[in-house]
Image (tube, rainbow, N blue to C red; front, side, top):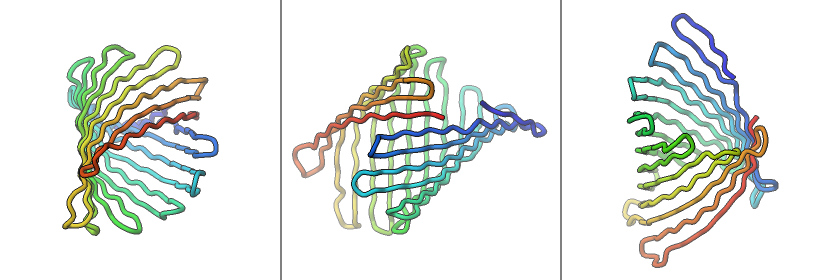
Length: 264
């Protein structure tokens, strides 16, 4: 549901807030609320604003809870088949174990439709994260391509890079990853996704220390089904392998999880 208000030449559209709750009994609970608004200034130019509240509770091991607030706002420009978004974002989180943490970021997201079934997207983001112990900066880029075979089947592939540093501690991370996924939306409320990633990373701590390099590969399959109105059940099975320089044999792990979620 959305409400629209005319303000001179502008048009403001407000979507009704969305609420969701997900969790595993006795392990964790997560609640989210978000709102979206679009201010249309003129044809092809609008201003998007998103706010969100998140509450997370963990009950296993050391009990932990965190509460966060998100704000993202910025213009969106449409020029023919191209669409450009320039959002500025801020996030504030309070954790009962670590205290306050703040994020701020700026991004540039360019999406171009190559045809009715193909779209490419380039995302670049610069962000800063601060807490009581340190301030870290992060630069990331992501180039992806999506092709829809039909209304129900689509494939997506891309390449992303992340560079993170903490100058006060001479710590940093450089990570490059390629990924691909096959996604399906099937009758009966079913959804499936098969995903795979290949990555390389270098992690260093100290100006004179040699970087710790590693290679990784992962594959996962996710299924999701709508049980009833607003109720969703999802499950994921994944397998990953990490090879660290100088360690020898790779480390292999498998994991799985089930989540029950309700949208309000």
